[in-house]
Length: 339
Ligand code: ADP
Ligand code: MG
Image: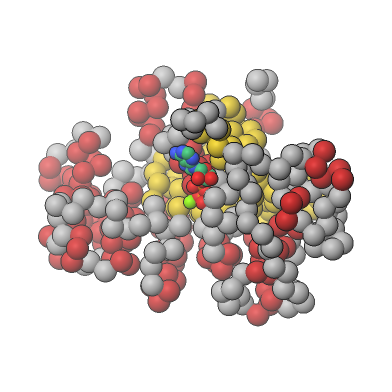
């Protein structure tokens, strides 16, 4: 693979905090099948931004998220941290920076050890990293608890004594103790009561401001991503189909899939997002990632598909400033006729 010059890697004079470069992740199954979970995914997450990743269940969002923090190795392509290819780092170099890159999952309970007090759980990552004295670790744990909006008494409790929202705050606190630069948030409010989602999303936003954090925010819920992200990317069956600033992508999508996804959205959107949007139903099931359709993977469900769509994989094109779309027939004015 060709090496990029520093200039090519730089945007707005800064290296991307995290970059996926033709990221491809295939799972070889025992029967010999290959699940194409992610193919040729490219994006650069800017320092301090929240980069949303949306798409239906099974589109490859979590696979990409896990690869971003080194929990999965790319089948091909690369992950870069501030311009440096993770695969080229020595084991020691990776261990040293690993804690800068954290992930928080959907199920707030699963991530906590039921036999540990909250304080013990909070100190665990620091203990594993061999960081500080016992007193220092306690202080950092209490500080993270406080920053996550929880009272100190929570420290002596066990996970089963906490509500879902409190547990997710503990998980956030746990990620914070190691002072990360980048956090993948994978469906972090999906399991929570609608009534507490807003306050958890606000906490993420506050912490970003305070610590200059960079987020990859994965969700199937467009209202969540629109609320928190600076830019949004859309995945369909392992491929990225659209990427751009949140406003344009969620209010005036250019890819037929994004268009359909948004108009099928059952959650109440702010009224300005709903104007003039006809409801388009996504018909049919998402095809199998073991044998995805040739050419454009969305073509089997696309109301505007033509012969070319089965023959040629559409490349991402910058149809509007910073707004990229992988569709042969999309224009800056909108998705192709029929969609
Ligand atoms: P999403 O998070 O968008 O719902 P995932 O990244 O979890 O999607 O999954 C993408 C596809 O890869 C799915 O078809 C899923 O079944 C498959 N997949 C994910 N992890 C594995 C794995 N470890 N082994 C085999 N297939 C997997
Ligand atoms: Mg997922």
